[in-house]
Length: 139
Image (cartoon, rainbow, N blue to C red; front, side, top):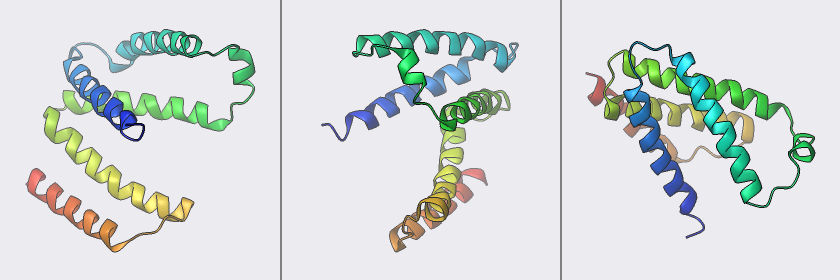
């Protein structure tokens, strides 16, 4: 169970994420909506930090590196991109499937180039399957 609960959390969260992104009113700027999203996310993160035994955020903040700041920018891009994707007319199943397939292909390259992860025959077959799926979905 320890191996799978994070995957279950990601899947469940992604379901809500996509439903909420698609349900964002067309009239609102995604960035205005995201100010509320991130205010709530900050409160929930702080509450969970302390509820799970955290003692000093200041001490934790001294351990940060560049990744937290860049992750913040990346998350804004993910959130805004998702909202704009649905505003552009993508369906809830197709849009997510297209970007996830493209992302998987890109991450294989990133993993290989920057983390020296092996590019196996199975991964290459997966890339071909993703590309075939993208072709079928987008035609």
